[in-house]
Image (cartoon, rainbow, N blue to C red; front, side, top):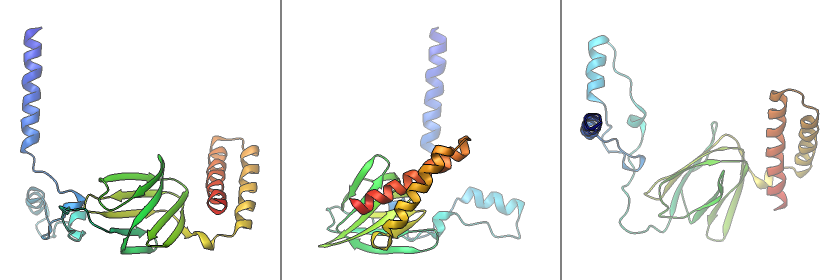
Length: 206
């Protein structure tokens, strides 16, 4: 019994020491000015395919970002993108409220680094007395420690461009589809439609 415990302890120490030897990776808020690369990967690549340049990693395409400030900044820098467009790029704002799956989340300058999944709902951008609201279907928000926020949504549209009559019509149609659905796939698709249109209706009436 004592021998087994000693063996486990030694194996844990060896694992921790080997993990400590692995070079640390940069956080998204600490992208270096010089593009980083894995030298061991490059060497292995050149041995196998010497006539072809090794592929670049995503880190090579990331622009350097300022380090985490020592004092609390006054503005939050927001990038809000869709698969086909960029709604906001490097815009400095006072606050952003996102529809996270855990509830409405307010993001202010100096917010702790967080990754949040988005659910159908209203995303509002606050700049002084101006508030711009978007309806987002889903996505993710990446809040960095240096007061940068990257918001990626599958679909988004300004609230003032939504037709309430079409929302009511869509909600009625998907509600009927859900009641008539017979397979799991039909039920899932109809439920998604009901959830999205219910969230749209709440965004317009709320």
